[in-house]
Length: 184
Image (cartoon, rainbow, N blue to C red; front, side, top):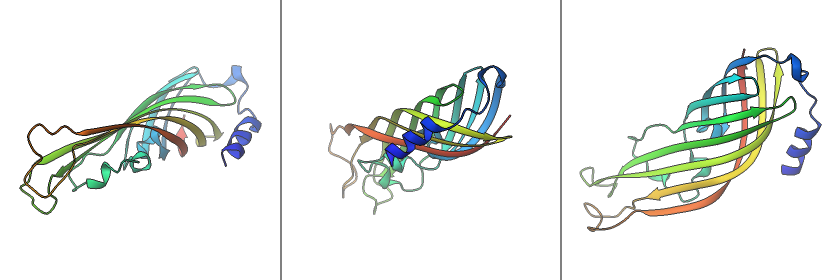
């Protein structure tokens, strides 16, 4: 699949000749991948070959290999994402960051147990292609990165023993982005 995606990106024809593309653009995309907060939307503002984006997602569970976000009790905010992109006439390179936090009770069966705070932070670089049809677009990108998960743990008492530190895990991730969008 990775080889097929790479061949598709390499063989894709250029959309506009380099000198006739728009000087600036604004767009909104809905998709999956770290550029979309796991699964969500982002707003992109660009000038020339560069664009900045920020957005909000539904979940970063795609990258939660350590299962930190599995402990949600309904009080956690949605993930946030942001990054920078460089576009050529044939492809783009995207540097992405996303962060999700999780709030839960140390003992899930005791609502008065200590409130715990975990987090998942991802950084990734993806290489992709965006196809345009008027104001509509479709993008596909593939890359890799790193995630940092902080898990304070859980148990069957009021809270963790004094001096207990959260476990922190750093691990590689595969980042696949697929999205549809509107832009001008």
